[in-house]
Image 1: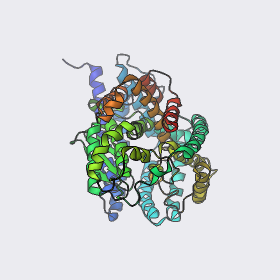
Image 2: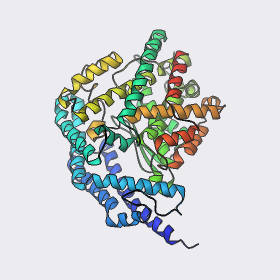
Image 3: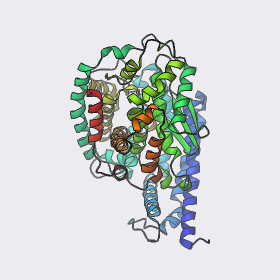
Length: 507
């Protein structure tokens, strides 16, 4: 059947966007390589590659040809859809394309070149500073990134707070006003819950791995096994090792995952792998036919995080999950787990204790780590905090929120990679991801009465199908809050997440 003029033009528009997506995938491959394989002397060329690819992508998505194609469907100036014959998902697509275009137009090529150069150099500086626990070595780079980020906020525009412009990149329709309310409520509910748990839990669960060794090769087998059981294909992903675990998808058929192994505690790599596997499943199940368009992109970073956290915590920290994996880990680590029963292992996995390192924190204290970073980022953006004072500010906030304080900068303000990458405004997505995950998990349990039995049998198919149906298939068709509300068929609220924590840990 011959295509109509409308269909032909829409296809041209999507093909144009696809070319930019191919360039972006090459950029992600270079970034993944920098974290996993690149020798230290490769930074100079990598910087040039990054700048060139960012420039080419920017040109592609702001070209006269692209604007002309997009303008045939939607008014660039007003956002009015000009072709009512489009399907609902196509209308959503052109609306998101317009938003992305306006964003790209505001962040001009000159600014992007400076920002890319600064973050590329900053990443290596952060790695070295973290090794030596020297914030002073990283501070000049962070000063530059904060200055450029302030410029970025100004270019994008905002009404109330410069941080709002950054939030819109990672979590559309979110604001400082909203997050201040959400995070204040979280603190009010989590801090007394934390105190109660610490007074009632069995302290002996904390130390069951002391003096134990878990061979790395056996850990790799465990990580490979769980990714396949979660539903990733052996042919669409690769797992490597890095200092900071992450997932980078080049396409739905090429998912790059990383984890970090510790021979004294297999849980660190195992749970990180489950977490990144959740991200990978989201990317692998976005609609392949829409590659290059917003319909094949994640709805937001918070929604992305909800996919990793529902797998890592709601599933991966559950009793049925550990009942299913207990025989296998006993087989892989017979000596280390010789006297460790399932109850002790489950108690250790869910042991609640404030820790300095965010990625190794428990479910209850995790959001306090995010609130700390959120408060710091807001201060850096509005000028109430200075980069040079960051180590001391970090120690004060950590003491106030968690009752502990880092001995050095590596386990304090240098622990996360995000600021070196220029990802200021990203951290709140982690907490929003937890809240979204709580809402999704509550809905999943209510609609799948046999879920616990399936998990105990290592059958995770219904979880994957639920997330495919409720989240993955829609891409960016809906804003994050609406997507969640459609998925759970009710108004979104943080309550299911708080109820999940309270019921699990008080019980």
